[in-house]
Amino acid sequence: MPKLKWPILLLTVLASISVLTMAFVQRLPTVKPLKGCLVTKMNSYWLCEKSENYVPLRDISKYVVDAIVLTEDSSFFDHQGFDWYEIQKSLQKNMTTMKYARGASTITQQLAKNVFLNPEKSMLRKLREAYLTLELEKNFSKVQILEKYLNVIEFGPNVFGVKAAAKYYFAKAPSDVNLVEAAFLAFVLPNPKEYQKSFERQDLTVFARKRLQQIIRTLFRFGRISNEESAAAAELLGGTGWINEKAEEPIEPAEPAESAEESD
Image 1 (cartoon, helix red, strand yellow):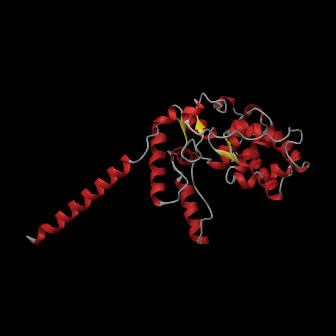
Image 2 (cartoon, helix red, strand yellow):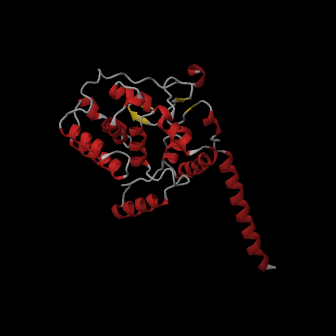
Image 3 (cartoon, helix red, strand yellow):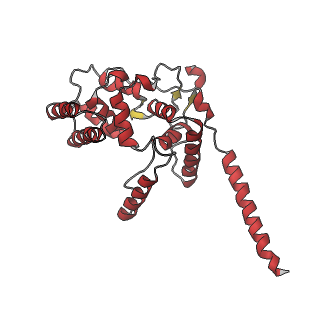
Protein backbone atom coordinates (compact mmCIF):
# COMPACT_ATOMS: atom_id res chain seq x y z
CA MET A 1 0.00 0.00 0.00
CA PRO A 2 2.72 2.58 0.84
CA LYS A 3 4.14 2.10 -2.70
CA LEU A 4 1.12 3.96 -4.09
CA LYS A 5 1.95 7.16 -2.22
CA TRP A 6 4.61 8.41 -4.67
CA PRO A 7 2.48 8.06 -7.82
CA ILE A 8 -0.41 9.77 -6.05
CA LEU A 9 1.89 12.57 -4.84
CA LEU A 10 3.35 13.01 -8.32
CA LEU A 11 -0.10 13.18 -9.89
CA THR A 12 -1.16 15.73 -7.28
CA VAL A 13 1.86 17.93 -8.01
CA LEU A 14 1.31 17.70 -11.77
CA ALA A 15 -2.36 18.49 -11.38
CA SER A 16 -1.50 21.51 -9.20
CA ILE A 17 1.01 22.78 -11.76
CA SER A 18 -1.57 22.36 -14.52
CA VAL A 19 -4.19 24.32 -12.57
CA LEU A 20 -1.72 27.11 -11.77
CA THR A 21 -0.58 27.26 -15.40
CA MET A 22 -4.15 27.49 -16.65
CA ALA A 23 -4.91 30.23 -14.13
CA PHE A 24 -1.75 32.11 -15.15
CA VAL A 25 -2.54 31.90 -18.87
CA GLN A 26 -6.17 32.94 -18.36
CA ARG A 27 -5.00 36.12 -16.63
CA LEU A 28 -2.88 37.12 -19.62
CA PRO A 29 -4.23 39.60 -22.15
CA THR A 30 -4.59 38.57 -25.77
CA VAL A 31 -2.35 40.32 -28.30
CA LYS A 32 -5.09 40.48 -30.92
CA PRO A 33 -6.36 43.96 -29.90
CA LEU A 34 -3.05 45.25 -31.29
CA LYS A 35 -4.54 44.69 -34.76
CA GLY A 36 -6.93 47.54 -33.98
CA CYS A 37 -6.70 50.48 -31.57
CA LEU A 38 -5.88 50.37 -27.86
CA VAL A 39 -4.53 52.32 -24.91
CA THR A 40 -1.18 50.91 -23.77
CA LYS A 41 -0.73 49.65 -20.23
CA MET A 42 2.75 51.11 -19.82
CA ASN A 43 2.15 54.78 -20.63
CA SER A 44 -1.61 55.03 -21.32
CA TYR A 45 -0.75 55.94 -24.91
CA TRP A 46 -3.36 55.73 -27.68
CA LEU A 47 -1.85 53.38 -30.28
CA CYS A 48 -3.96 53.38 -33.41
CA GLU A 49 -3.25 53.31 -37.14
CA LYS A 50 -5.93 55.98 -37.58
CA SER A 51 -4.20 58.34 -35.15
CA GLU A 52 -2.48 61.45 -36.51
CA ASN A 53 0.66 60.40 -34.64
CA TYR A 54 0.84 56.99 -36.35
CA VAL A 55 3.09 56.49 -39.37
CA PRO A 56 3.39 53.39 -41.61
CA LEU A 57 6.80 51.76 -41.86
CA ARG A 58 7.07 52.74 -45.53
CA ASP A 59 6.96 56.43 -44.51
CA ILE A 60 9.82 56.19 -42.03
CA SER A 61 13.36 57.04 -43.14
CA LYS A 62 15.40 53.94 -43.89
CA TYR A 63 18.18 55.48 -41.81
CA VAL A 64 15.88 55.46 -38.77
CA VAL A 65 14.71 51.89 -39.29
CA ASP A 66 18.23 50.53 -39.83
CA ALA A 67 19.80 52.49 -36.97
CA ILE A 68 17.18 51.37 -34.44
CA VAL A 69 17.08 47.73 -35.53
CA LEU A 70 20.88 47.41 -35.48
CA THR A 71 21.27 49.06 -32.09
CA GLU A 72 18.25 47.54 -30.35
CA ASP A 73 17.97 44.08 -31.90
CA SER A 74 20.36 43.27 -34.75
CA SER A 75 18.99 39.75 -35.25
CA PHE A 76 15.35 40.88 -35.19
CA PHE A 77 14.48 39.39 -38.59
CA ASP A 78 16.13 36.07 -37.75
CA HIS A 79 14.89 35.15 -34.25
CA GLN A 80 11.45 34.03 -33.06
CA GLY A 81 11.11 36.62 -30.31
CA PHE A 82 14.17 35.89 -28.17
CA ASP A 83 17.87 36.38 -28.93
CA TRP A 84 19.43 33.52 -27.00
CA TYR A 85 22.98 34.60 -27.85
CA GLU A 86 22.37 38.06 -26.35
CA ILE A 87 20.65 36.51 -23.34
CA GLN A 88 23.72 34.36 -22.70
CA LYS A 89 26.06 37.36 -23.01
CA SER A 90 23.89 39.37 -20.63
CA LEU A 91 23.81 36.59 -18.05
CA GLN A 92 27.59 36.30 -18.17
CA LYS A 93 28.04 40.07 -17.87
CA ASN A 94 25.56 40.43 -15.02
CA MET A 95 26.99 37.48 -13.11
CA THR A 96 30.52 38.83 -13.54
CA THR A 97 29.62 42.31 -12.28
CA MET A 98 27.09 40.99 -9.74
CA LYS A 99 24.59 43.61 -10.90
CA TYR A 100 22.20 44.30 -13.76
CA ALA A 101 24.72 45.73 -16.23
CA ARG A 102 23.37 44.50 -19.56
CA GLY A 103 19.93 43.76 -20.96
CA ALA A 104 18.88 41.48 -23.81
CA SER A 105 15.31 42.45 -24.69
CA THR A 106 14.38 42.07 -28.34
CA ILE A 107 12.14 44.48 -30.23
CA THR A 108 9.27 42.00 -29.85
CA GLN A 109 9.81 41.80 -26.09
CA GLN A 110 9.92 45.59 -25.84
CA LEU A 111 6.67 45.85 -27.79
CA ALA A 112 5.00 43.32 -25.49
CA LYS A 113 6.19 45.23 -22.43
CA ASN A 114 5.23 48.70 -23.70
CA VAL A 115 1.76 47.73 -24.91
CA PHE A 116 0.46 45.08 -22.51
CA LEU A 117 2.36 45.34 -19.22
CA ASN A 118 2.77 47.85 -16.41
CA PRO A 119 6.15 49.07 -15.06
CA GLU A 120 6.30 46.67 -12.10
CA LYS A 121 9.42 44.50 -11.87
CA SER A 122 8.73 40.91 -10.88
CA MET A 123 9.29 37.36 -12.07
CA LEU A 124 5.59 37.01 -12.87
CA ARG A 125 5.80 40.05 -15.14
CA LYS A 126 8.80 38.57 -16.98
CA LEU A 127 6.86 35.35 -17.50
CA ARG A 128 3.95 37.33 -18.91
CA GLU A 129 6.32 39.22 -21.17
CA ALA A 130 7.76 35.93 -22.48
CA TYR A 131 4.28 34.55 -23.17
CA LEU A 132 3.17 37.74 -24.96
CA THR A 133 6.38 37.79 -27.00
CA LEU A 134 5.62 34.33 -28.36
CA GLU A 135 2.04 35.36 -29.09
CA LEU A 136 3.17 38.48 -30.97
CA GLU A 137 5.54 36.46 -33.12
CA LYS A 138 2.75 33.98 -33.85
CA ASN A 139 0.05 36.52 -34.72
CA PHE A 140 2.01 39.30 -36.45
CA SER A 141 4.63 39.54 -39.17
CA LYS A 142 8.05 41.03 -38.47
CA VAL A 143 7.12 44.13 -40.46
CA GLN A 144 3.95 44.60 -38.41
CA ILE A 145 5.83 44.14 -35.13
CA LEU A 146 8.50 46.65 -36.16
CA GLU A 147 5.93 49.21 -37.33
CA LYS A 148 3.95 48.99 -34.07
CA TYR A 149 7.16 49.21 -32.06
CA LEU A 150 8.35 52.35 -33.84
CA ASN A 151 4.97 53.96 -33.22
CA VAL A 152 4.84 53.31 -29.48
CA ILE A 153 8.34 53.52 -28.01
CA GLU A 154 9.36 56.51 -25.90
CA PHE A 155 11.96 58.88 -27.37
CA GLY A 156 11.82 61.49 -24.63
CA PRO A 157 9.60 62.88 -21.85
CA ASN A 158 6.09 62.26 -23.17
CA VAL A 159 7.39 61.82 -26.74
CA PHE A 160 6.00 58.52 -28.05
CA GLY A 161 6.53 57.12 -31.52
CA VAL A 162 8.90 58.06 -34.31
CA LYS A 163 6.57 60.64 -35.86
CA ALA A 164 6.38 62.65 -32.65
CA ALA A 165 10.14 62.23 -32.14
CA ALA A 166 11.04 63.51 -35.61
CA LYS A 167 8.81 66.52 -35.09
CA TYR A 168 10.00 67.21 -31.54
CA TYR A 169 13.74 66.95 -32.15
CA PHE A 170 14.11 68.01 -35.78
CA ALA A 171 10.84 69.67 -36.87
CA LYS A 172 10.65 67.08 -39.66
CA ALA A 173 8.50 64.29 -40.96
CA PRO A 174 9.93 60.83 -40.12
CA SER A 175 10.55 60.24 -43.84
CA ASP A 176 12.96 63.23 -43.94
CA VAL A 177 15.20 62.29 -41.00
CA ASN A 178 18.83 62.11 -42.12
CA LEU A 179 21.59 59.70 -41.09
CA VAL A 180 22.97 61.65 -38.12
CA GLU A 181 19.48 62.46 -36.84
CA ALA A 182 18.53 58.79 -37.13
CA ALA A 183 21.60 57.84 -35.11
CA PHE A 184 20.46 60.28 -32.40
CA LEU A 185 16.99 58.71 -32.24
CA ALA A 186 18.59 55.27 -31.86
CA PHE A 187 20.93 56.68 -29.22
CA VAL A 188 18.19 58.03 -26.93
CA LEU A 189 16.10 54.84 -26.81
CA PRO A 190 17.81 53.02 -23.90
CA ASN A 191 17.32 56.01 -21.58
CA PRO A 192 15.28 58.71 -23.34
CA LYS A 193 14.75 60.99 -20.36
CA GLU A 194 18.50 61.13 -19.68
CA TYR A 195 19.96 60.93 -23.19
CA GLN A 196 17.77 63.66 -24.68
CA LYS A 197 19.60 66.24 -22.55
CA SER A 198 21.85 66.96 -25.54
CA PHE A 199 18.75 68.30 -27.25
CA GLU A 200 17.82 70.42 -24.25
CA ARG A 201 21.31 71.92 -24.25
CA GLN A 202 21.44 72.08 -28.07
CA ASP A 203 24.92 70.63 -27.72
CA LEU A 204 26.00 67.00 -27.87
CA THR A 205 27.69 65.63 -24.77
CA VAL A 206 31.01 63.83 -25.26
CA PHE A 207 29.27 60.52 -24.57
CA ALA A 208 26.46 61.27 -27.04
CA ARG A 209 28.90 62.25 -29.81
CA LYS A 210 30.93 59.07 -29.36
CA ARG A 211 27.79 56.92 -29.30
CA LEU A 212 26.43 58.50 -32.49
CA GLN A 213 29.77 57.88 -34.21
CA GLN A 214 29.65 54.26 -33.06
CA ILE A 215 26.10 53.79 -34.39
CA ILE A 216 27.10 55.22 -37.77
CA ARG A 217 30.16 52.95 -37.95
CA THR A 218 27.88 49.98 -37.20
CA LEU A 219 25.54 50.98 -40.04
CA PHE A 220 28.53 51.09 -42.39
CA ARG A 221 29.95 47.80 -41.14
CA PHE A 222 26.63 46.05 -41.80
CA GLY A 223 26.37 47.58 -45.26
CA ARG A 224 23.40 49.82 -44.52
CA ILE A 225 25.17 53.00 -45.64
CA SER A 226 27.93 53.80 -48.11
CA ASN A 227 31.44 54.97 -47.34
CA GLU A 228 30.50 58.44 -48.62
CA GLU A 229 27.48 58.62 -46.31
CA SER A 230 29.57 57.51 -43.35
CA ALA A 231 32.29 60.07 -44.09
CA ALA A 232 29.77 62.91 -44.48
CA ALA A 233 28.11 62.00 -41.18
CA ALA A 234 31.49 61.83 -39.41
CA GLU A 235 32.39 65.26 -40.75
CA LEU A 236 29.11 66.72 -39.54
CA LEU A 237 29.53 65.22 -36.08
CA GLY A 238 33.07 66.57 -35.84
CA GLY A 239 32.13 70.16 -36.53
CA THR A 240 28.84 70.98 -34.86
CA GLY A 241 27.42 71.35 -31.39
CA TRP A 242 23.87 70.23 -31.96
CA ILE A 243 23.25 67.98 -34.97
CA ASN A 244 20.35 70.01 -36.31
CA GLU A 245 21.41 73.65 -35.96
CA LYS A 246 18.64 74.93 -38.24
CA ALA A 247 15.80 73.21 -36.42
CA GLU A 248 12.94 75.33 -35.19
CA GLU A 249 12.33 76.04 -31.53
CA PRO A 250 11.59 72.86 -29.52
CA ILE A 251 8.04 71.64 -30.05
CA GLU A 252 6.01 70.62 -27.05
CA PRO A 253 5.27 66.86 -27.08
CA ALA A 254 1.65 65.82 -27.43
CA GLU A 255 -0.22 64.66 -24.36
CA PRO A 256 -1.01 60.90 -24.37
CA ALA A 257 -4.66 59.95 -24.64
CA GLU A 258 -6.46 59.40 -21.37
CA SER A 259 -8.86 56.87 -22.86
CA ALA A 260 -9.83 55.23 -26.11
CA GLU A 261 -13.19 56.96 -26.12
CA GLU A 262 -11.67 60.41 -25.86
CA SER A 263 -9.16 59.73 -28.61
CA ASP A 264 -11.39 57.96 -31.09
